[in-house]
Length: 233
Image 1: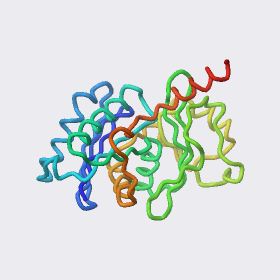
Image 2: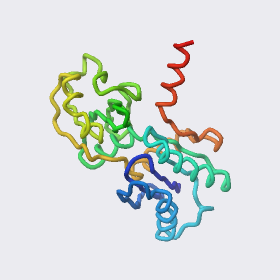
Image 3: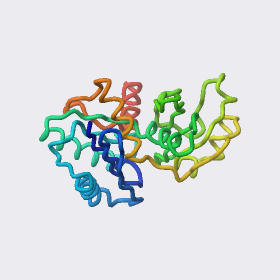
Image 4: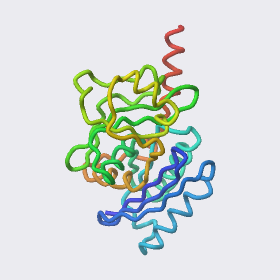
């Protein structure tokens, strides 16, 4: 099973290729250069593995939440590839990918993931990694004020680790809001396509790939804006 994965949702830009479960990848912190790097990274991986695009079984991408422009770049690339190759797309949550990376590198099971969403908000979710590396969302993914985040009351004492740029921008406020102690904090933690590729492999095995027309970005902020308009009406 061969899966190409890309991510451009945050300041990081990465691509990964899973070939029979073995993953090779490219990664660079490159704000505003994703458009120039991502196809080059993907082609480099295919060349290293000796594969052609026609040998791919699926394409995966970090579907957000994240930068509007960045998420659109990845979605556009995989839509083009999937349409031309007639293969399924595997959208993967940016927040879940960050939690999976923490588990893969540091065996962290409980993560509070927060990406700085600008405008005084964060993209937020609490995640749990099961033994085999499956990511469970313990709270709904949302864009929210740092002063309004929460975790279920019965999880206050869990061994939480903080991940993401939201903690760099609003860490003190979020800790005060949650009323918990952290075991560690990684405010410069970004998603990596290695994890998107691994998660996509699980999804493809389960038949969870989607057709190209359903390979859509997740912005969250747009959804919130629509709800606000509805309430005003």
